[in-house]
Length: 334
Image (cartoon, rainbow, N blue to C red; front, side):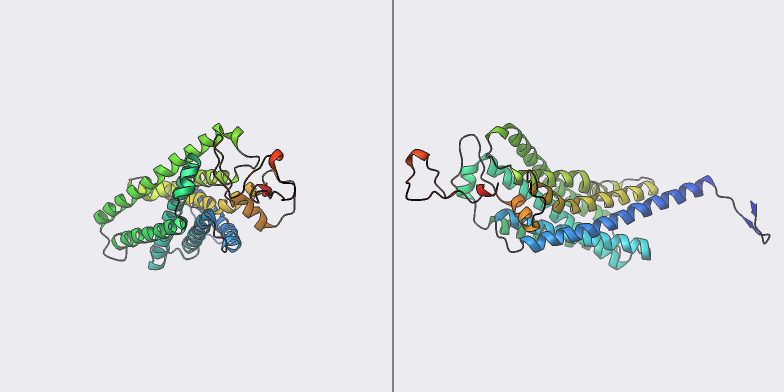
């Protein structure tokens, strides 16, 4: 005990209290970093939405929906962390609803990345078949179905697993198992299609056009960031939540997974910018042009077979000197 100036005694800090203070400080710092990351991600995804909201190419439809899902996730994540830090409101109704919306956006994010990677994998493996048989509004239909299905799953999970409605742990566990089966079932084709894309790019690197495969790089980088940064949050909600572990370990894992998932959802705009600026020598360029270059659907060349792009390439010996030959506008942007 230590004697103070007014004669009262104060207890000396114990090793347990010191460790607890260090633990609380670590969690607080990680939470603040997560909120700052969410703010940066909100700005980046808002810029992406503003720049491509009028574009109607199939891939831009996916990117627009992905940016909206990321924006919703980051907004909910920042709100939940702020409520925990400022008001210490962990089990209020508002916090519970925001958490459910956050996991809804998380499910949409995962589903959209799976649809993007799978669709691009088909376009690389079977370019002619994909170009001929692909429905015109496939991207819009797929995005609508994914949002609807994810919303229904979130409503069912919220009905059985909310703490302010007669919480039944057994019912919640059953619903959680069903949701996790869907999530990991969605995760499998995303991983497989991404591996196929990566192998195809490596093997066909000498057969591509002079233009770099930017779109494939965007897809592969986005999937990789999700697996590395955002997947730990899903692992906690599906597995570690039901495992009997020390409470401090769970809290620390949740704090780190919140930071990593915030990084994952904030990284896509940065990926678009870096890929769009790849191999470009101009330092000052409008963000819209950089984004369009990163997201443009490039002609896919596999071996010597290329799908028709609407322009006929004519050899120099057979060109009509009176008729100018127009180059492919897509290739002209390289």
